[in-house]
Image: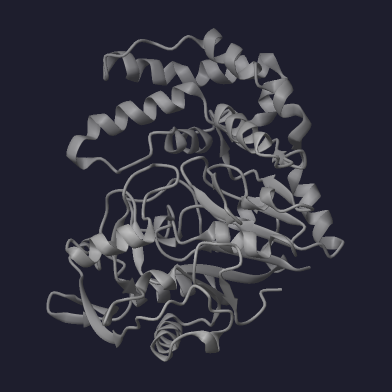
Length: 427
């Protein structure tokens, strides 16, 4: 039962799409298990670049079945726009499967997301404004709309009415907005039913049967460990569980069936949105990392905050997810620095701390303790094996591996599909 989880080990944007695509030719199913179109993956195939927001990266691999699991929240308009864009470029999207238990992002979820974030002012979280959080809130409050509800107009109408009872009170009395009509929402959602129908199925059954038949299933997380609703830098987090445990609840596959958990690490650190970030740079080095690394959010279009590699966070990700391997991406971006700082610990109230503090206040005040590693100037984008890397680049990778607590089994040395050094096979 070769089931693998592939997830972000930092704050997201680590290059999960590249890692998924690397495995795509050997994988039978690729499953998105949480999040929505607030995540983004960039995959480069030859001279073609694909920006995916909701669809699993495996949709670009012929022979692979892409799956949107029950833990994902789906905006139908975004889904069909993305499918249409891929079809126009000759990508076969007919194998896509969508869980009937996945929740729908409704128009009122998007409205609530935008008005509440705007209302927070300086205290805003930095959401994408795409309705993700309100949809998950509806799910937990048991007033959510699931994909399967689109096939029973009576149930759909009742659920929309129940959801709008409280939301219209809030919109009109607190935010001075117009009330949203139930009929209008129901009509819009029913308009997607026939288009969704060919993709909707019992994905829990499909995936478990696939594993029983020794098919290879890859679970692909959106965002990253430090954005997990339970284990991230709360409240500056997403509304779901991008960590390894979320792969089980978001797909209906039990934990005993997971064989490997692969964490994606960028060779430096970035994050999008508000929240603490100990190694964040505000100088020329930060601007250089942003420029050379092309650090702009695939989905948000926002510049990413950039900083040096944080080994404390990497160790935390190893522990929380039970990581068996790392995939280190964007090593090539660091070419040209004479010395490269790596955060090995924090200083908090004058004390050295080597593990992530559980206190939000402590983490907010954490100052990075750096160790300087020698850099390299040679172009590494053509490297095909670990021994092809300059000695200092090899030493950098080995140091990160030792600090992070799990073996680095693959290294990205460029954006292209073939610009990867595979040290140990993930399968």
